[in-house]
Image (cartoon, rainbow, N blue to C red):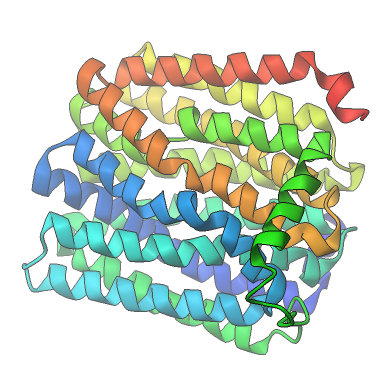
Length: 405
């Protein structure tokens, strides 16, 4: 049995190039995420200021995602992604150098996070809507699940490496390695032979608002897309704030240092990786709403369980299960939206997806950071889990009305 029998997206040369480049780059990204979060805590000892970093990083996405979708629908996606990935390499190098020279301050991390936020506003919808151009609709769910798999494999490897390197060599090495890792994805993009879309430059200045309105009207008239997006918005805001909650929980509740934090995030990555590979292996069965609802309910349940205990080992196990159900939910939601989107609206639809998936992070980060500062991460995990379960059950109760429209 060939590997492509289970993972047919890998039969597409362009997707293989993109996927392998992402595999290297994402390990570096997770190393920087872990290093940056722990560095902020060391500099400030404040969960609120840690949440503020995350909020600022996603603020541009919240404000400008809808306009970014119009840009993605007008210009070649490959060239847009080349620009954003190259720029990420530069910002990582700056962060690494400032840290190595021991002149890094909180406000400098804040500014670099904001710059990365603007880059992500274009990068995320461009990458998400580029996948279908690489594999087509038939293998889309498989490709999305494989992307989730490589993302979460990186979540295992990156934090574990970062935890060791921080303890041995400091923070700067993590940021330098992240900067270098973008070379792999840039080479892959250069070798890819499709652009993603033919540029539509006619009336570029006068049609932006009209194009934006057309995209919003299209989403409004597609109940499956609309309600899936709303479900992502709620769970992203209140239940996917692990980058804020886990380091605070690790330090203040479990009383562990950077290595312990890195291993916990790796445990979550293991669960997410298994979930992604499971979803990829059954992708030939098609997109099934049961995956969407099971993912949302399971995510909420295991967050509640994290909040009612204080064992390091049990936390690692529960984070692994949280990762499994989170990736099941997000991959199913992404596929459901793209499969039901017309080609000419996909950039705008995925920009709204980016808005509710990452753009609400400033709200979610401030919610998690503030609630954790006031009541502790225990209570925040429990409240987040209750919200995720409650809204998932609400959408499930309206299943026939939404998915048969």
